[in-house]
Image (tube, rainbow, N blue to C red; front, side, top):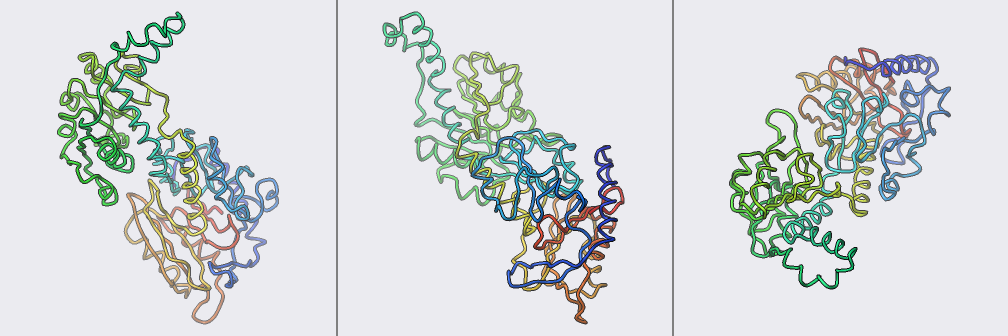
Length: 479
């Protein structure tokens, strides 16, 4: 099905052996629906996906979802995981990954991982396209760090207006010479600047960060605000100041602006945003414009920006992304990547990521995913079993999935099917009792569905965290 690395092929062989062993000893287990009073007997083929029962004590804590973290994740977020249901960094294998800036490699993703969440908005450090092929949703936390980044943008505006950094360095030098008190008044003329009130800021990108920046500049700093965002959402539009003037292009937005704030995502490839602030856009800037880039360094054509800064002693470029052509320029102010580096932002991002993972693992709900469609089904009806199916977005898949239940005389109580790009996601609540009153054996049904051409993986959600996951890899059924 997919090209696999050697370690993944080895894992598949081991997992296939696990399936054969557990199939020989499978027994009926109690499966709890969402309502605590409802118990349903469901025959399944495996205890917990990918791990042999004999080795279970070495790999996992029985009956818990396992989350592995990269980087230091805020305890505020980790505490969102119910300790009765989750174990964090307690196992060699895991069901979900949680990270911040760690550059994730495919080799670091265990075969049976169900989800990946990043504590932050950008996902450039995750191989999203490959995870989509493997049927793994990647989640982010849009808006969690918006206020922190907005405040840094405002800080950048002051830094770019008043030569504050140069003044600090100058006074340190005078202090080393014992001349600070003597020159503190005399030398202030070297660092003159301008005020923000009444000036114009062009906000490029009006999402969470952009809309907050526009609002604070208009109502808090008394600035004139123009904006550009071809994909402006209704939610973001409602957050914009009423006095904002929306433009139809980046060039028209920046023309005449004293400040330009870039708040757009970095998208590679044709039609993307790499170098979108190039020579053409820069040619429309005022000679003393201050450009604020706390989004992504790759958005700006460095050479074109350097030419602009070389031509004017009053122009400024302020960013927290270093660049070989700009980091030491006299008119550049380059900071460490501080955008989301506040305690509050890290706490909020971790909490959002933890909640998102929990909702997906426990309920099958998808929200804030960059590669899967938003999907949510109401609470399961009494005495029902929830199943999720991930498949390629090709015609006829939903019919094949529902036909499988029909052939087994099972009724679908409620379902939802959404797609995004090449992937489709299904959530179905099933009545596990046939019309004749017989109890179903979901292990065979799950196998039949998972082995359908186009299906990538499936999950049966019930009261044993970690169980019920099946995946098709290179044509093999893996549990």
